[in-house]
Length: 115
Picture 1: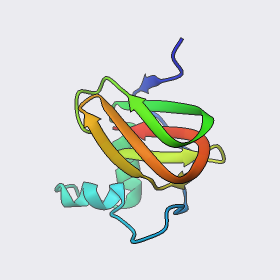
Picture 2: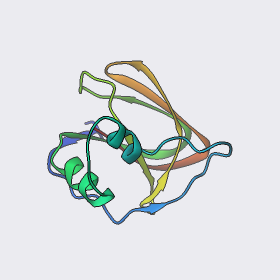
Picture 3: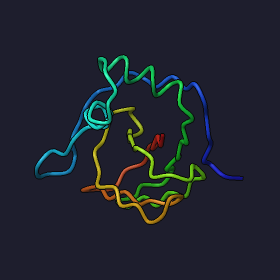
Picture 4: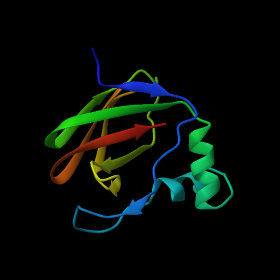
């Protein structure tokens, strides 16, 4: 049985920003959303996410590299939280339209939300 699930209309937990990887800060998913022509606040963005089909990857074991196979047939946006529901930033590499890998500065367990 797979620990990965696809949800629609999810309700994310309260979000606390935390950057784990050192170096220059990249664009947030919200900033990319705005650049793609959307308008609104971060709350509007979260409401848009809730209405979008979301693939949730459950990373139960502590790991620095997460390889995720999904069936979204696209290069999805990625948001990651640790087991305490704190947002964590990692470097995403798209392997194909249905597989990606995320590298973090250290290992941890948590969830990745793909839209």
